[in-house]
Length: 404
Ligand code: MLT
Image 1 (cartoon, helix red, strand yellow):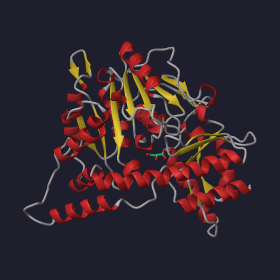
Image 2 (cartoon, helix red, strand yellow):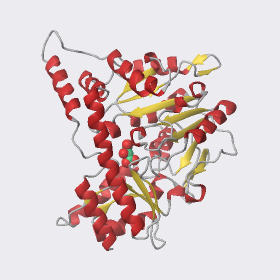
Image 3 (cartoon, rainbow, N blue to C red):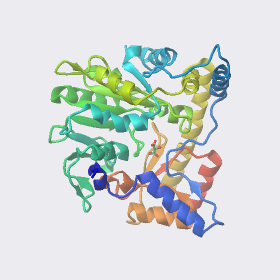
Image 4 (tube, rainbow, N blue to C red):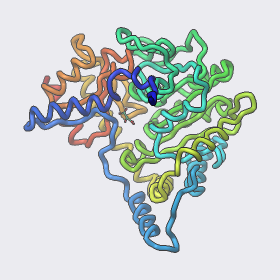
């Protein structure tokens, strides 16, 4: 008789955003006349920029012609895209990465879930709390997290680094030494970030501890402050301790298109074994490359027209962030984030817990957000609103919340 991977049985409940979608669908069915504004999952709403659409059309036409047709993509990504990434995301910022350290993928979600495969089963992981749930769940599936305590909502073998208003959302170095440290900066869900010098301290810590930082930079395009690094490789020594994951979802509206990349530097080794070579082996075996049309779309992100159009798109969402933040602040809410990231993180009012506030907002304002506790125990008493809605919906949602 076959046996299942018992680790899946340890996962509590369903994936956070699936739970929310189910709850909202049930509520909509019971209240078909209610107009619901969704500021829950961080899904973009604005159309893809014209320069990118144009590149996709061209690539589609190429696929319809025998001379320009493309079959399987190179499994690590087309050179034209890897080179554009190196030029614009790294060289332009003073980071010397090479094209063969870039691995094009179908997005940062899968990369952030899959990257743990490179590490020993008994590796200790450290995560910020609250945290993007994929980092923990993927390690649960791999059998690395020990036993779940439903009371504390913590795994026995995970090192949690609380990030709350009390420590200004800056994680402290853990007492136990981790092997893998997940950092998402600017941060999902809190919308806060670290300065470059604070990040440098983490790089120094990881190098000293012999740990690897899995650095999720999905929200990098939203950085507005000068003293924040756009890549962990801006920090000295990061190439020997960090893997960086990037996404086209939030900066270019690709949530439905799917494209991302991982950077695994050649200098990252474990007893002489190259993690870059391991990831290349893994990619080659398990992935057949992001589609040609999508990679051409990714290339257009770096064109002059693409860059200008995306700057406007980011500004559009950040106007939403500013409106939510200011509006809630004026109404007496305690609010964080929204300056270097498209998320607003607020304290729930009147001692409501995160899920109580979720229900309250849905039922009384028809607004969907994300309960902070869904991201980890230190998220309890907080709530996340995304700035990725349309401006009209954002303003309407805010008006409804302020009327409560
Ligand atoms: C979020 O809402 O946290 C993210 O958009 C989900 C994701 O990117 O997978």
